[in-house]
Image 1 (tube, one colour):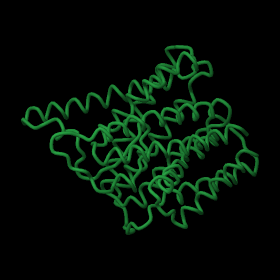
Image 2: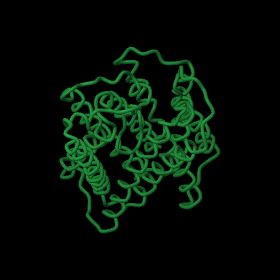
Image 3: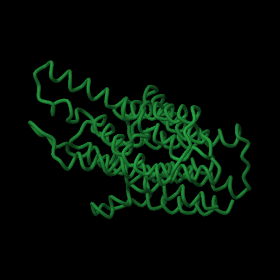
Image 4: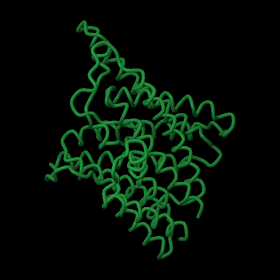
Length: 319
C-alpha cells in the first residue's frame, strides 16, 4: 500500500521538523518558535496552493480551522506535562495516544478493516513508537496523575488533528492545511503579542519576552517536540536573539508543512488507522537527523525501534 510508505516518509520528515524546532527553542521561547513555524508553514502552503489546488467549502474550512485549534491545545498540554516529567515516560505516552486515538476511530467508527497481517503491523508499530521515542540517560521516575492526564490530553489533541483532517473532502486539496496554519498563526501570534506587551509594560527589552524560560522544549504546530535536543544549554542573549534561531524556527515550519502534505496524501490514499500508527513514529526522523548532523550515537533500544518501524511499515503496506 503506497499510503503506508508515504505516511512513514512523512513521519521521518515530521521528526526532522521537530529537530529544527528543538534547536530553535534553545534561544526562542517555545510559543515563539511555534508562531514562527506556523507562519512560515502558512506561507509555503499558500504558495503551493496554485499547484496543489483545492476547493474552498464551508465544511472544509471549518474542519481545517478546528484542526488548528487542536494543534494549539496539543502544544499547551505537551509543554505542561513535560515540565512536570518524567519525559522518558510522558513523551512516548503522548506519541502512543496520538496513534491509538485515530486508529480506534478508523477501525470502530469508520469501519476500516485490516487483514491479520495488518493488525499485527499495528501492534508492531505501537511498540516501535515507544522505543524510538525513548530518551536515553534520563532517570526513570513515577509520573504524577496530573502529568499522565496532560500527556494523554496532548496525545488526544494530536490524534484529533488527524481525525479532523481525515474528515475533509477529497477535493479540498490543501485548503484544510492552509486553514490549520492560519489558525495556528493567529492564536500563537496573539499570545506572543501579549508577551511582548507585558515586557514593554515592565520596561524590559523585547528579547526578554522571546527568550526561553524554565524548561526549553522545541515544538512544531502539531504539538510534537524534540525533547532531547531542546533541553540542552539555553543560550542567553541580553538584547537580541541570534538570527540563526529565527531561521531554524522558520525552517521547522517549512519542513512541518511538507510533512503535513504527505500525511494528507496518505490519508486520501489509505486508511486512517494505518496512517496514524506510522505518523506517530516521528521521533525516528529526529534521532536519525541528530546522528547525521550532530554525530550523536543512536541507543541500542532506538535502533531496535527503527528496525521495528521499518518492519511495521512493510507489514502495513502489504496488509
